[in-house]
Image (cartoon, rainbow, N blue to C red):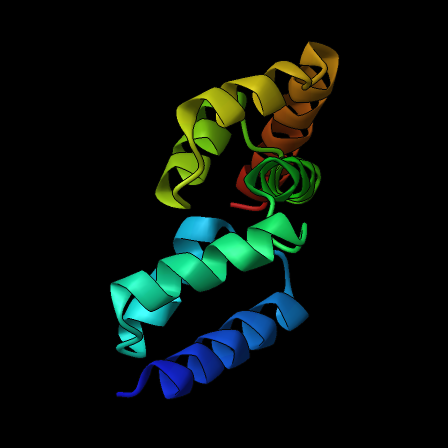
Length: 123
């Protein structure tokens, strides 16, 4: 694959994935690898997108944590595991998770428990 073709493919893959939702740099790198974009081209394109502010693992992590905690009521431990699976650096995960309000986590756990109790009462 010529470098120009690889760069064009990398841009398309990155734009297409970012158009759907925010992505971690690691997720995008995996998508490029699946499309057989050479590693050096992928890294250069990811750097360009990151420099332009279109890839930001910290903002991705904040959005992920907000979404998953509000929709699923997940604990910070589970969220940390998910961020690790998404390739977010441990220091970024710690920083973002430290911003969580412990009271919100307790309320989410209570909602989850209440839902479980209601579903068990049907039996």
